[in-house]
Amino acid sequence: MSSFADKRINNRLPVAWEGLPFIGIGSAITLLCFYSGFLFVAVFFGILTVFTIYFFRDPNRLIHGDEKTVLTPADGRIIDIQYLNDGQNPLGESAIKVSIFMSIFSVHVNRVPIRGRISKIDYHPGKFFSANLDKASEQNENNSITLQTDQGHKIVFVQIAGLVARRIVCWIKTGDRVGSGQRCGLIRFGSRLDVYIPKGTRLLGKMHQKVKAGETKLGYLT
Image 1 (spheres, rainbow, N blue to C red):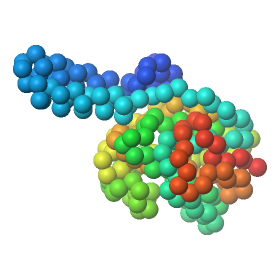
Image 2: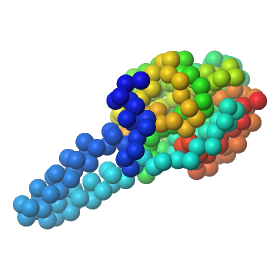
Image 3: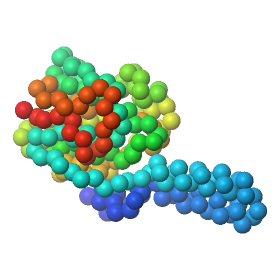
């Protein structure tokens, strides 16, 4: 794993590294306007910079996952749960699809749902419909990550861009060994994440439930 990715996965800063350029530029403009006497403009950029810091926050999480526990890979709210029987989905078999919507106020750092090895990553360019719409799963820009657990289960989680989100970031690669709750990427400015788990999984997540990446238990593999 490159040092670039390692710094982000093992981040010790209170904000994600991707946010530092935005925070730095906002702070510089704020100070420049303040010392130039443009107080109203300085206040505006100051507020914008504070929100940028808030948006890119990257809090540490207490991870309580084991070899059978599927953790939620994103902060936000569960907006859809579907039972898919025909195998026409990224998992390639009967599956449970759980969709999590991240508003601009959610933590946007994504985390690995369960320990295992990354077997495939597929990036697909696409459109930018609002992430809370059903068609966003199929038509929006997305990055599909397939994980093989130590017990042979397959799980797929998909980073999906939204109406405002135009940048999907992934810090892991095919072949990587990953741990439960490990940071793996982020999506800027509001988005969605779909999780496909085997149909026999004992589902714990519920519709409209607020969830936290790496902490909320989504289900148990059987």
